[in-house]
Length: 246
Image (cartoon, rainbow, N blue to C red; front, side):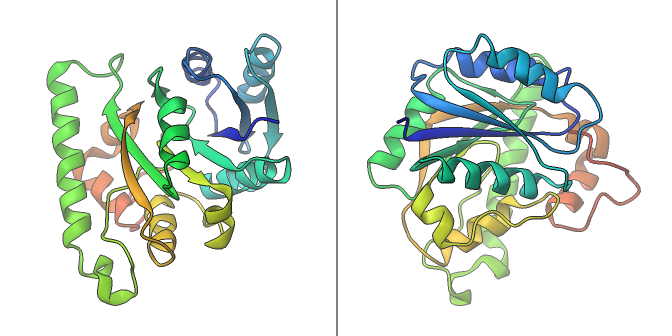
């Protein structure tokens, strides 16, 4: 039985999920089971995933989660994996491109004793040139610094570990820890910070895994702008914007 399961939540990603699935098929460590959770899509996202399953170099399960919200999709996928024997869990998103060493890095971090491993995110090369990618890296650093300085994240609030920026599209967690903290909040984005803080109240075994690298879509940044994106990450909603562009 495969101990590592990878979960990919997907909403309206028929045109993009193929590249994500191909990136997973190109992993150096392919000893894992993949779960794609179609989250109330009205396009052919699930069909693309099922077509991939026929030729994939690892087992693929395609689930349907009708309750819209990335937290709902992730929680459904993780609990399905745990119910089928997973002890190690990893997640990326259907608009992201994990580098070839991503699953190996996730497995290694968890086997070395991490409860939660957070990887590095970069801007997708097919969406941004060198200057755009540099700007994206700068924004990530600013966001991480803000998170560490935010009063609500200080240890006096019951946290056992210092704040470290955690991107949900590049994470790995043990099944035992996932269940112990109550899982991913079943709600729309953003959920990453809420989940991280659940973990921080439970354990200090949180690491940054340099071998876990994922190229991240910058669609939200382009759609919302800098201020709108910051507002969204602060859990203030999309403002005048409509549905999450991812």
